[in-house]
Length: 437
Image (cartoon, rainbow, N blue to C red; front, side):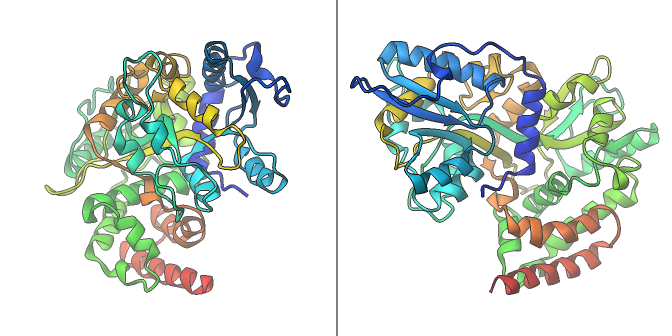
């Protein structure tokens, strides 16, 4: 079964919450098989449901693709568990020619077992209507190169069309600390200003460990460099937990708690209670994915002006890598019309078509030359100005769910000291790996 990330549920749920239902029409609403008249065709199974704005964007392009090429498109709006159906289809021989999902859905499910086509030829393909520009020319390599192979043989198995990220959101109209901090010390100084003004500094829901762990992941990245989280949790000996940078990270989180910088009642709150409180201007900062504005806008205080900044540095030599979450197309090898599927990927990469990810779906296009929605303008700048990394260095599944999260939750809720946390987390991770055999 495909493991659906909590952030994926949140990101796509936020989009759905802001979508408007529309009438389905045209060739792209059918799930009927291809006709027998010899005409070219392809089948597309999408991660979106039919009433979501992404589906509207894709429908428009699928319809024009059919008119421009004569290739009949049979699409099924499968929803988030589309990869479960693809996996089952591999056994029965019922496999789409084109599918889409986030990198950490496609990778562990299909790329790991070498079920996906190599997209290298697509990245070199010319984009219709773009005067010789190729797909690889318009989608930054840093969005593609960061995607892990998950042990499969194919490096480039997906082509992103929309990007999410994780950054610190704030209200630019808030007068307590209107300037975005660049360093950890500056962030702490702003936190003190907020608390002195009877305002919480950091919003957090205690039960959202998946989101709260962004603080540890980013801090460790700034303290110990790129790849440090992956090294920490994948070290079967536990020796990496003895790195002073790990204790420093835990102490920085402990300082947030002891200083009262996290919103009151967070330890007993359930997502998205405190997220909504942040939007109501009751906390200064909120570390979350770029879906936060869409999910909170109906709770936002009057005059709330969405801003975002990259996670602060902790030393002069800190990396400034920013978390990137890519959603995109992939082509199963078992598909019967892989050439047509690849042709559509290049067709959709056209600026006018992919640009609708921004103008219609209010999300970030994988093309940085497409203007971002106003609420995500700062996020687009962060992505453009900094190197890319994956949340938790791409580590997911049992390692975090069963190995890391339980002990980290105790630290974040203030139930253990930094020293206790490091000791207990090391023991827990070693036990996790020993149980794996």
